[in-house]
Image: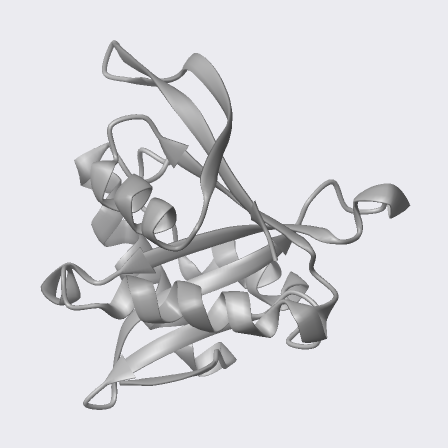
Length: 163
């Protein structure tokens, strides 16, 4: 497995992996597939020197990706805090790709001047909650019943750690 910075040419794979997560109703609040045009601005906001997107390659295929995003952009007091997101292609689940991506992102944080990292996880996404716990994240907050999927309401769990 190779973990590297994402390139614009990786965006179709990033989108495909993200769209694989939508039907589960456990990994993202999106309920419809996203498209290249929807995600290009998002991709461009993730400057490699501040808020990178990393991809994990297995046998030259993008197996997963991880992004670090600004928290409340423009508010100087929060400049050392970032949100981590990660998605793994379904054929690579339970093969250590998520662990490797989160470890890589954590190791990059000091050079990026990120001191506090958090993830927002849909309640019921046990795989992600276990991964974050394994990586030293703790529950920092909980918003009950904020997401609705076909009449089923679930909460957001905020998991964080200081880097």
